[in-house]
Length: 599
Ligand code: GDP
Image (cartoon, rainbow, N blue to C red; front, side):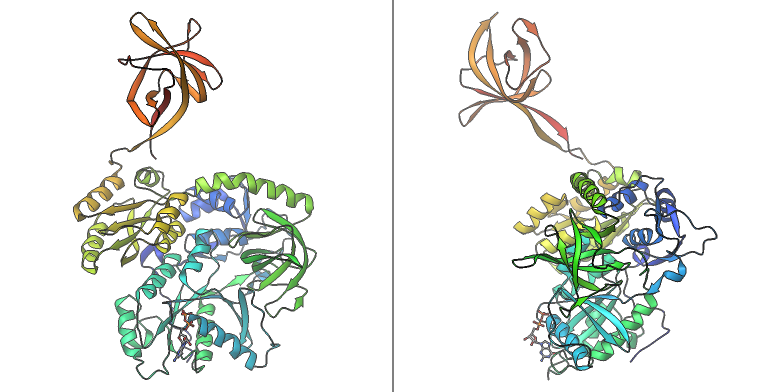
């Protein structure tokens, strides 16, 4: 049953996590956008960079671009009527106006615990549509598809699960408007159900619950509703605001009702885009086809994509030679929220890459170059918070909310940790627990931390190998504790910037001892610098074969010929005296290092 006019069937994080509306003009400068959002302008510039737009703080952004950016902060933008049309970045016709904004289909993701019927539901939805007499036939799998219900379209992403969802977010692309949470009526809320809820909430995406497998004799939808309420999702029938539809993906029961309810949510979300502008989109999946070459499935987010358009996708580009829809049919255009397969890119992009349309090949190549150069910087800039840089990030206004994921050994540890952490909030920063659960720290936890710029705290548990690797490469801080007091104390100190600094060793250079001389009773090593540089200020280690003979030495003299020098670089010889160490031998290796504060 469709329930129009209810406030929101939306499960959102409390407080600042809730999606708020914001009115934006047709165009505005980056600085104005930062002021409107009360966020650091640098953060906005980084987000723009991640979307392939190189902007300074005075850069003027058009509404669609600003809208995409504010979404990342949990805001839904509306166009503010503007007396004077501003200059848009891409010199679009002054059409990017209210009249050109049109409602667009919602983009829906299916999440839930393994075996609860996500795949079967996606199949059932696809088939329902075919039975309705749609242009159907054999549906080609392109990673997403569209169905029509009551004359309105809905786009489904065909990769179910919160991992795919958060993977896209971690890549800087949030494309989902609504999540269907599938819960099997005979199994109830399970760990991955909990995870899916946390992942959707962290992204501020509304949840519609589908209680599946109601055909089963042991189905117990009421128990599921109870468990959902415990997890913070109170269904409408119990006075909450979460739409819940009983379904059977197997028997195809309740599918239409589910789709109708998605339309209700979509309407409340007021999803709009401007089909008259050049297309912007996100890659859902891409592959190399032996016969056709690079094929990329892209979700067009705004504008219209047409054959002949020149596009930059991630760090590749090309002229669109042909477009194929989800039925495998060649089409002339793809409008907002349409998944489309593109033929014509020069190489295979990555899922999550952004597509932008550019005027010509030259601009395409220039943008690709810029993106390549920036990708290194951006990946560094995009590093999340860690306990050591936290205070700086808070002071500079970059972090107002500390997103935390907690994993514990037993359920009983969660509550005291949660309560103590929430009490640590200061007037500058709130601690927000975006996910908690029992068990080891998983890749999915780390992915959520990346997507939400958060920290992972493990209490009485360790991390899976994959999680450690991912955390190391993406700069996510995972902390492990066994005593609640230590956890709280360290977090408290980090928030206040009182944590003892941690130092890491940075090797500056290496030298080989080729001769030993005696000078005023001291031995001088005649060395050849093999790597980097050796300098007076560095600490030095003496290695003899596999053994370390001296761990922390200091340079007492450094000479080239007879002259004192400050440093000598690779390829040069010099004489080195080591303070309070007279045992240097030919063949020893001297390693020079400095301790650097980890930030
Ligand atoms: P996923 O892991 O969430 O994608 O789950 P699947 O869609 O693969 O479904 C897992 C199992 O549950 C399969 O054997 C399905 O046939 C079965 N299943 C899915 N939906 C239903 C349903 O509505 N009723 C019944 N009885 N079985 C279902």
